Image 1 (cartoon, rainbow, N blue to C red):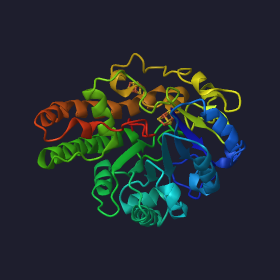
Image 2 (cartoon, protein in one colour):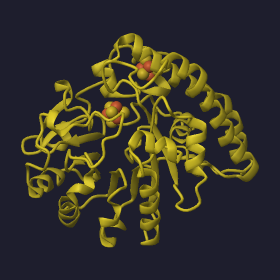
Image 3 (cartoon, rainbow, N blue to C red):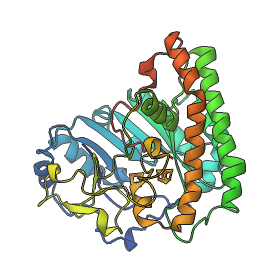
Image 4 (cartoon, rainbow, N blue to C red):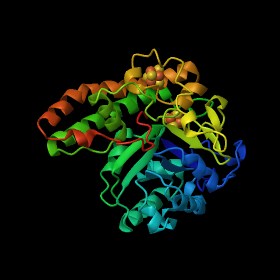
Length: 364
Ligand code: SF4
Ligand code: SF4
């Protein structure tokens, strides 16, 4: 199973859309359990995948190194804002399978959301980890909000040559906080006139690259959903929260999702008293999702949003319009993808991504 190990809630940035304020959390900012406790807990999982998460996890580099020295994991993942990557020593750097680096697209968009100079610093640090021998999957992880042009920002990141991002993933800045729509001038119009048309353009770009060059661009939401469709997988909450993905807060509390500090229903135990096998399937998607006509593809999108309904049902359903459009656009091009596979212009294996739960939530 996948475990988000939250090694600190502290962060060295204050991004515009982020609700992370360690002083407001009912959690200590740093680890209040020992790495031995974590090892004892994880020993009962034969195949743990560990994703270091924060705050900014590289602010607790000593903890990361201690965990990597003393625990056997099938895969190591890091989700970072990228500013401190140079501190990660080569011996640990090369143990990671996947590094997700927060960057929101073009320089002006990234710096607008995340702070002046952030884009440049992140790019420099990603170049540095490549030059120090990191050969794993580097995912540019975007937050998408009112100033984003999804087509231009995703294509910008995908077409960078140095450094090269293997994949681009994004999460919409929606349903995270109250009051709703704070960072949008007119959310309905943004969805209808900016975001959804941008998705259509991006789907065309994705398909054109397959047809013209046999190249499958690493657009994670497209890949994850197309995989789901091609393999006719069962409906599933793609992020796996509460199913095969759990988060361990600095106190040792286990949560179904790494941002669910304030949702009692998603608190599932403590690493000192709960066993991994007791965790899966205790919380389920509810509300409008299980009877929704898109459930087969969407799986409920986000357990946290499903339980908190911070924008009310009306706001929740507005976000579903983005899912509906994404699914219908991918269904539109699915016959083309199948034809390209039949003709060996692309191989099925190129479309099977992610190969395991690598902490990308798939549905933005
Ligand atoms: S589209 Fe909306 S209502 Fe339907 S399953 Fe997804 S999140 Fe739930
Ligand atoms: S998609 Fe939602 S439920 Fe899943 S990990 Fe992210 S915030 Fe948590």
